[in-house]
Image (cartoon, rainbow, N blue to C red; front, side, top):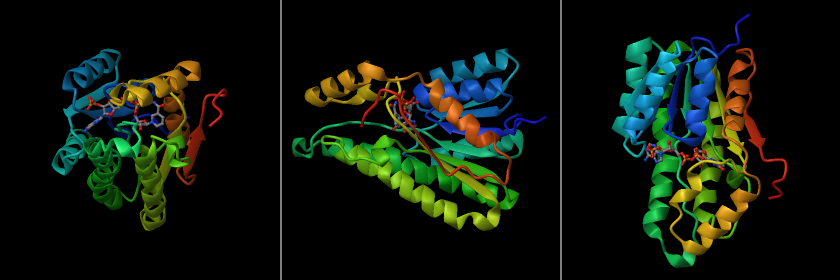
Length: 248
Ligand SMILES: NC(=O)c1ccc[n+]([C@@H]2O[C@H](COP(=O)([O-])OP(=O)(O)OC[C@H]3O[C@@H](n4cnc5c(N)ncnc54)[C@H](OP(=O)(O)O)[C@@H]3O)[C@@H](O)[C@H]2O)c1
């Protein structure tokens, strides 16, 4: 019986580390064709080689999600190589915590560009193909921070709230095209995400928070596989998960 993952063409942004890499590995293991996007092209190329070496099908395409053209090129490359796109995972993201009064405006801009505009560019690139196919699945990565607001997390939380709003609007709009939409909102997962925080106090607080109980990235990969593997008439709209020991 089909797992509804095998042979699906899955485009993943932010596939060079953390959640994106873990999803690429699990989905490839379960028979999906994975198309990997990120800026660190050496990492996605070696991941694609590794997955291909194990009998999978994988393609790496250098992609900066702040460029609409590059995101379009990523999705176009998937369709050119494999004739369709079944799943778009808008996963690339950046978390740079700091209190607003520090005025780290460049970091606010970066998070808005990657976490909001990057997701919109992913939708813009995938949607026309999925409309024509009359099938597809768009998975957007939000966060517990898309449900809560924390001090020093204001802009990051705003971007992750925006991802949920965009996803819900998308869900309603794509009904005529038989397209599924899923928001995945993880709690603390051990990845490189906290390493980009430049405010020393916020960095120390987050490090302490993650050290306490962050769970491995395959928790996210299994959530993706769960949403994808449902029958095509079942649309899992959101998965919110946390480490069992995470209170907030
Ligand atoms: N880890 C957690 O606790 C957690 C919790 C909730 C939500 N999330 C969300 O999960 C997603 C993945 O994060 P992660 O935890 O796996 O962190 P990560 O290990 O730092 O991975 C982030 C990924 O995003 C990519 N990325 C960043 N800026 C990019 C850009 N401009 N263009 C293309 N790719 C870019 C990075 O690739 P390159 O640097 O190679 O471009 C990397 O592959 C993010 O959206 C994050 O907000 C994570």
